[in-house]
Amino acid sequence: MRLCQPAYSRWPAGIVLTISKAQRYEITVRFVDTNTLKFREIPDSELTTLERGFAILSHTWTEEEVLYQEMLQQTPQMQHKRGYVKLKGACMAAKNLGYHMI
View 1: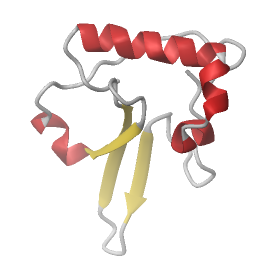
View 2 (view 1 turned 120 degrees about the vertical axis):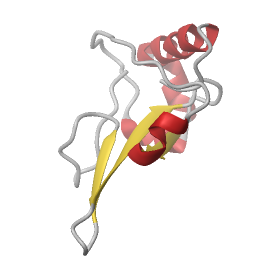
View 3 (view 1 turned 30 degrees about the horizontal axis):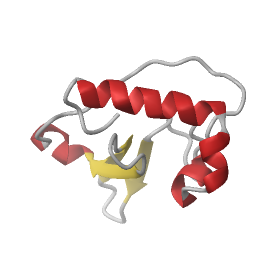
View 4 (view 1 turned 45 degrees about the vertical axis):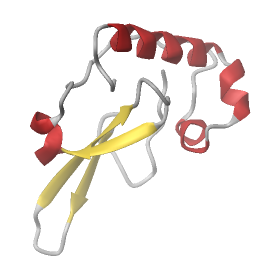
């Protein structure tokens, strides 16, 4: 799955860095919920408290990947892309192993 990052972020896919005025760093990890296929952002301080944890899956890039904006808006067009089938399959595999997020 291809998740394009917003312009303000240069971190790897799924990681958002926020710097407050006090110069505290808070990292938020962006996951895909395996039930809804929607983004879910979790602060790094809460990662160890997740009941079911999360799965990290590898993939290869192909044509017709689902774009970041399509994921945010849950556009009907994304469901017709090859990358959406791959995303659903990844979510199903993680869910079958007991994970709620990838």
